[in-house]
Image (cartoon, rainbow, N blue to C red):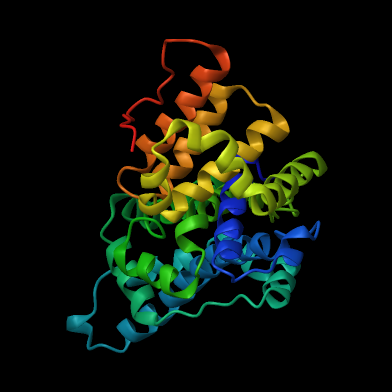
Length: 316
């Protein structure tokens, strides 16, 4: 299930597309406006399993290539690496009908240069965790699961060659990588104990209404919201000509959420400073924090500032 923070991110992405004239307003008005975005997240999630399956298959190729070497050049214990290919959790995923069907339906398959897989494997086999796995006398199911979790934890997000491949293959890698990898790690645990292990990023009906109203309201009333709520707290001329476009969009979403849903202002500041820090420029978090804090003070009549930790603000 996708929470509201993730939906705010999706709303910002779509609002940016709308502002760039890459997404028409009638598309945003549809109740299923973020279906395509959820499908992109799901494809990236499925791809994590295709990476694991391809890595397991590569081990067989490595073994076959190695056994063709003259005996004096052949590494000892090379057959131990076949354990990764035979990993029962990985075999379950590889042969799972739902995984096969969803991969076909969403057009997901391994698309990388096998040099990427080779580099991952050569690095993996130097790790202590992998060494312990292949040398274990007879690992239990938890041991087989542990090595797959180790691979997902250390490679898609932290191994430069693989991360570059993911980024080149998926336009949404930067936005959805944490969601996809963490969801895949959770699914691995379910794969060890349940037939129904795949996760789909569904949205509860209440949150769907929230996301739809947030996005459409910001898109159709954004300038009015800026005029009414933001301009009284900034230097108007500097704001109109110097404020980065993404900061304006974040403030439009924040004002739409504030007026339509009236969340606690501290929560609102936290959430939109997070968006500014993640998607904005160097000073975006401080700027958004300052504007929202000024609005908060005006609403409450308080003199004490609420400042998101780590942010500072200077009126533009």
